[in-house]
Length: 502
Image (cartoon, rainbow, N blue to C red; front, side, top):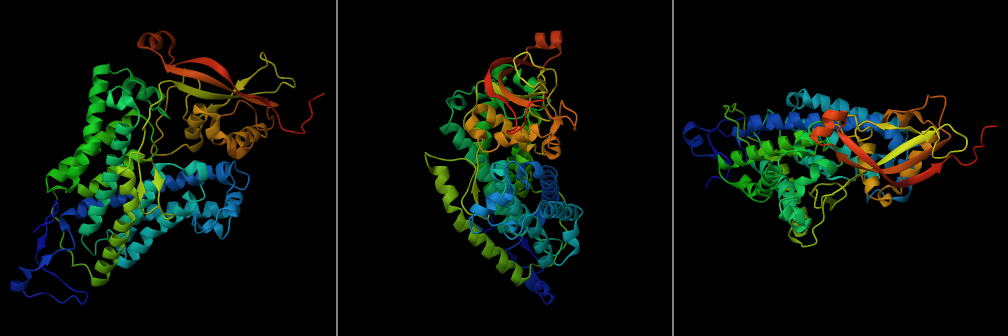
């Protein structure tokens, strides 16, 4: 019997020795292990995944010093001193320096670029697998010491997908059926888990009203988010209903025969592109699209490839068995009424649970950070605002598109506005480095209001309520945001032991 969603092949089977099978016998041999019709899907999937690895490593290389470096807000040396290797495996347990981290991150970029260019196809199958495991191991090392800055579902999703995709093979073998199914299994958990957590979470998902608020209150709006927010409310209801169908019904169809599986994957891809247009969600939407390619059988004639060698079949089946066993905890979490989002159940992030926006904020708050050169701060001091790259600040500045590149500080500032408790372990360090005019920290910002050689005397933070302007307000003021002062978030603060100017 044919496997659902795959065209099983009759024809030539060659062993490791390359000996051919007699023509009459060849017509009766079933290639149970591979799905040649998915070779183009595999090619696009692997190259797309390599591009996402490249973005992830570049973001790490360009941002780590201020966030995790030796003088960072959450230094890695302090973390590895208190957390054991077995709990968070990482090469940085063996050695850490900023130079070594940079070398690892840029090495990850180089390997990802080589994979994007197809370097794995020029290698034997076993070497291609090892090459794909290099960026996985390097990025695992970063995530496991990344602390708050790397505590989001798309990190584990990149690792889980990257590990499994390493066993998809290269031009020497056709794509293995079991790996394609397991990639669909990841996609199923991403979508179905997100759908369940919405139904179990905020009542606005069941009332179909969440999109009345979401585009305005999401962590990092994009250039089109203002327009999405102002779509007619009946259309928002349709969007939410369609989301429930896409996340709770369509994922089941990934395991149906073709062309149903391809249609389900295509629908998911369209939905994810809609989300790409509506906001900045790091590479979450893009890697979901990558996973959907595992179910998309593209109408291109597959090339003739030799049968998979025995060692490759054994290896893939052993990895598959391991991942099936590890799937127990994510499945139990999905069916639990106390379902949690974005949890890793093993230190290697091999099988995880996902979900997003179980609750939706009704009001948007933003922390505005300011500094002054005055020796004695008061309300009328010349307070100057720090400008962030992605998070809302100046009401007249339109949001930019950054995803799949991820601005980690900007994203965490959204959580800081929800509650100071979310920023307790790093916000004080951020203020301290702003008072020092720390070069690496200022690189994370769009603009500092102070010259490099003239740090502020005091820094403060204030909480504002932000809302999108109406069409009329936009025409009259040119501002996409309207903000209202709520309260003081952090009183004027200066470095300890710094004397006032005479």
